[in-house]
Each structure stands twice: as C-alpha cells, then as structure tokens.
Amino acid sequence: MIQTLYLGRVDYDEALRLQAEVAALVAEGRAQNVLLLLEHPPVLTLGRNADRTNILASDELLAQRGVTVHEINRGGDVTYHGPGQLVGYPIFDLRTLRTACGNRMGPVDFVRGMEEALIRLCGGFGVQAGRIRGLTGVWCGSSGAERKIAAIGIHVARGITSHGFAFNVTTDLSDFELIVPCGIADHAVTSLEREVAKAVQLPGLEAVAHQAARCFGQIFDQQVLALESLEALRAQAEAAQPQFPAEDTPMRIPDEVERLLGCVERPVRA
Image 1 (cartoon, rainbow, N blue to C red):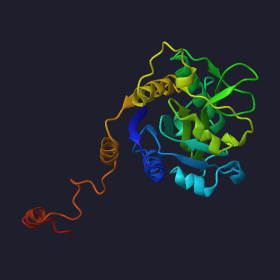
Image 2: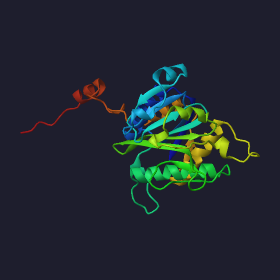
Image 3: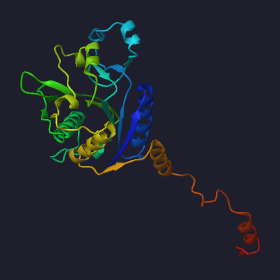
Image 4: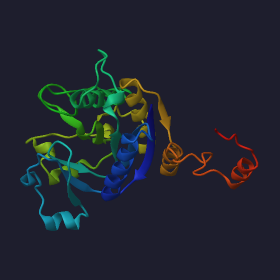
C-alpha cells in the first residue's frame, strides 16, 4: 500500500526532518510506503555529485531573491525547487516492490518507475512526454528539442528510499536561469502549464498531486490511501508500536494469589 499525504508549502529544512521521521517509521514496519507531496519556497539543492559552479547566481543575488541553498545526500547535480512545482518524496521500502518480471525492485528500477508514473501524469493532461537515453528525468518535445519537465534524484539507505522528484506545474521557469539545471549545459526546462493545449484548464497543485499519487499506485501496483494529516500517520504508527511487557502479564504473583496458596495444604514428601 502507498499512503499519500499532501502537505502544501513546506520549508526545505522541515521537509528533510519529515523524511527522516517517516523513513524511520517505514524501516520499523510501523508505516506503509509513504508518498509525501508538497511544494517548497525557492531553494537550490546540490546532490552528492553536484558541482557548485553550476550555480550561476552570486550569493548576494540569491539572498535578494530569497533563495536558499542546501547540500544533500541524493544523487544528481543542482536542482531548483519553488512555488508551482510539485515535489514528491516517496519513502518506500524497496523490499515490498517487484518489477514486471517479478524480481525485487532495485534503485534503478525504482527511478524508472518514477519516470513512468510522471510520464503517465503528463499524458493525463494530453502532454506527450518520455525519456532521453542516458539521462534521468522526464522530457517533453521532439528529438533535438527536448524540454525537461521533471527532475529526479533519490537516496537509498537500508532499502528505504528518500528524496524523489520535482515536477514543474506552474513554476516560474525564469528561476532556472540561476543554475545549470542538473549540470547539463543548454538544458531547456518546461512546465505542465506551458505544454498543455490552450483549451486545457489546469487544476490546482493539490489536485495534480492526487493524480500523481494515483499514477504511482498504478505503476508500482500498490493500493493508494490518502491520509488527512501528519497526525493521522503518526497515530497509526503509534498504534503499530508493540507494547512490552503485555499489560495482562504480571511481573510477580499477585498478593491475593499468594494468600490463596498459603491456605492450600501441600503434600509432605517422605
């Protein structure tokens, strides 16, 4: 099962903390696979393989525009997050997932599944999208004129995934001029808003998030359950916490039993 939760706009530091909290619950078996869906204030993230020279703006300009910078442990180079962008953090136990061939899913399989879910999400709005050989992410447009609509980068520890994808819905694409996106020169970016037909009315970000969750359920062959709040997730995890010792197991013989035993005449051994 995938438990999905839409959180609205969340500061990046808080999102990192939430990922760690949920990953611990999933690792302990106290939560199902969890898909956190949200958006961030303007932020640049640098993955493990990032080259800081791919940030083109000065520290002063970033500060003026309210853009923060974070170095994190996902794969990939520099990525931009901001308003109008759907960010998904799948906290999944890979041991619960299988490929189409029935094999246990590995990190590369998982990334390909994420790409397929986002390609399907684009298709739901009449936008044709696909992959580029040798690159990670989802792209729109014809060969030689591809435009990236979704960036992907994950981290896996003890079989549990974190980090995830950034899907441009109504994102201000001029913010990508602050960086060399994903470290790829001449890297064109796009958004769902730019790619849909003029007659198509895009829903709000939360509605797109719910559609994304359904696509994840279809691709990973998992039932999807929407949670109302973080508190609901925490309450479920608390209920799943084993209680030791059991409340009905006494740690010593109760006084009443001791008194009864004292009234019983015990046989005398010769």
